[in-house]
Length: 306
Length: 292
Image (tube, rainbow over all chains, first blue to last red; front, top):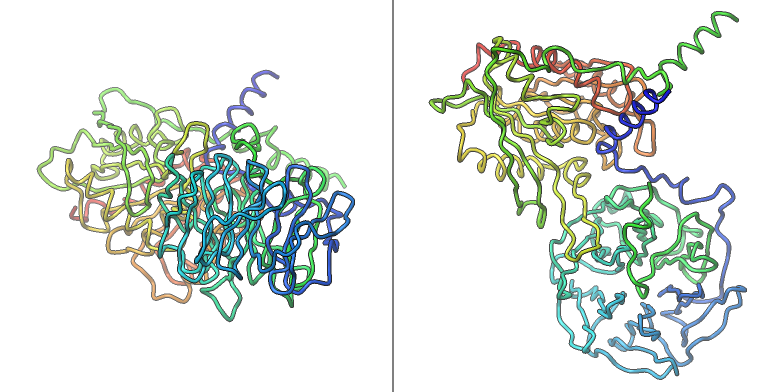
């Protein structure tokens, strides 16, 4: 008996290096998981993000004039009025809400009193992340740049010309890797975040499924990550999900495939509900995983799946 | 009824890890150190690539005792090299090479055992970015360029490697298996002998298209050995036994010099390791006619 168990254990050990863990869609989605409508009546929803309590925040980048909030009970309301043209939102570790105001070509932060402070002007920001140590990275889609605003407020270009049209941006769960989707190509890129906040070692780590008519352009857009190391990328073909080694787990078609799907994030109870912005509507569905939160201290090994 | 039960039992026996067909595959006498057989030397090194920016990896070089540096030697490259070079694994390549070279069943061959790249974390507590799938599963010439333009010139500083592609073989397991095929497919001027065990000719990153490509591409002068197991993976990327059968059928259709050995194993190197000396005899069967 013991010898059989030992042999089995040894065999499992031997086969381990050959296979990174497989992460099929069925691992993420419970059997009864369906898209559910969260909010509707907007022109072009974008900028989905969550806070520590699982409330959802979003913008209506084309038609709206506010940052909206969906609370735990599913009630939708205005959170910050008079804030039009926002394409990216993230909460920082300081409890403030950072925003890419693409319409005004600036990056701002809303304080706890909702007062706005400008962090950068005359820029072309699309989407952003804020790390636990207070570095802000944002994409500049038209100029092929990724920029950083450090905790002192200084802005630098940290990548130029690598990603054709940098759009979505996300932090790995350990915050050691920055992932950036490409609206003008078929890859999602990864960079190592150096101790000084610069980016190194770009790799076209993830290859997206592309539409038949544009085989080289996936229209990669808003991104998020989960606690098991997966990357989620919205695109022309839907929401594409990758495992931590860059292998495609699968594609979830948009709830309404006729409309663009441009932003995604986990929110809701236990941060277990995957939300997407799909035209004028926001949808969600239950998952078996949870979102990785940039404003929290990075969690690495303790949440690795077996 | 009885026959049905018997068949079920047989299927269970083959399919269940408890009865372990996979564990029945063990290294044979050619993988054991034999008295009087000269032993080659293995050295360990590290390599930083620029083709795969930021990656670091270990590699090992086996130089047979018969190599005296006077002329170039045949070459065999192994992906996931650490497993192949180990004296305790399923393959034990240095010992197999010692024995077969001594017996005249394969040429004096330099072994290069290279691991996949890792981009180490910048800060303590962070995870490395594992580059294995990107390097091995992608259908492109990138990994071939890494081997041919970066790694082998470094190895070539200390030993003379044959430039005759018929004297250069490449081998791997799983994603390393498709990677070995991809290198030879992209660069038949550099490698013409391929050994794939439990090869991932599946849709991890598009590798399932090889059977179709093989059928509609002018045949390349490759010799291809495939090992596969009936109980290998069936997952989101594909079905490994079916994929290898498709490879075999395509190689046959396009008239390649090829062989598939289908066993009853799972996704492990055990079967490939158990038959590896026989694989080498088949792969190098005409080595005495070759000019390294």
